[in-house]
Image (tube, helix red, strand yellow):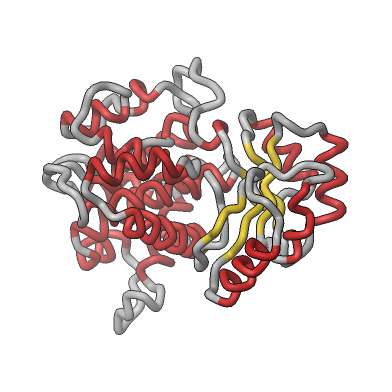
Length: 326
C-alpha cells in the first residue's frame, strides 16, 4: 500500500516522461493547483533530477537499486518536504530495514499478504479480539456476551470508555459502565467500534502500516458500497478481514472459522469465485497504484475513476484519525 499524504491528489511522473520546459511548466501548474508530485522508480543519476524541486514523494524500487544507492538517494533527496517511498517491500526484514534507513512511505507485497501461514493457534493475547469479531457477526447482537468479553480485557474497557467519552459523541455526562455504554451506543456503532478495536488490538505488535492498511481497506470498501451494487454484504467487514490473516499470522480459512459471514464475503476472502471480486480487485489495484487495472475495473463497475480515488483519500484520512484516536 502506498501511504501518501491523505489530503492531496498525487500526480505521478514515470521514468519515460521527458524533462523539458513543458513538463516543468506542468509541475508548476500542478503544485499551484494543490497536487502533490511523485517521481516513480527514481534511481541514481536519474534524468528527472531537475524535477526533484517539485517532488513531494520520491519512489525507489527495492529490486532495482542497491542498499548503497538507496542510502545515497535518501541522503541527497530526503527532506521534510520531500518524503522517500520504498517500493516492492516484500518481507518484514525489508520493511524494518527501510524504516531504519529513513524511508517515510512503503509499498509492496508485505502489506498485502501474511509473512507466515503455518501458525495454527491464535496467540492467547489476541483471542478476545477474534471472539469480539465472532460475537458481532450474528444478526442479533448479544450485548451480554460482548460486555463479558470487554470486561475480561482491561485495555478493551479503557478503549471503549475513551471512545464513548470522546467529543464526537457529545454525551451530557460521562459513561463509566461498559454495559450502559454499549446500550446507548446503538447496534451500528457497537459493530463499527468492535471491528476497529479488534483490528487495532490484534495488530498491536505488528507494523503500524499493516493495521492502517486494514483500516483504509475497510473504510474504502464501505464508501464504495454507496456507489456500486454489492448485495447484502458488509463491505466494511470485507476490507477489514482482508488483512486479518497477515495480522494474526494464520491462514484465512482459520481466521474465518466461527465467524458468520455471507457466502459472497467468505468466498472473496478465500480467493474463490464471488460477486464481490471486481470490488476486491479494485481495492487492491487502488492500493498498489495499478492505474490501468483500476481504469478497467472502474469501467466494469460503471464507477468514475475520480470517485474511486476520492473514496481512497477519504478512507486514508478516516483511518489515520481512527488509529490515532483509539
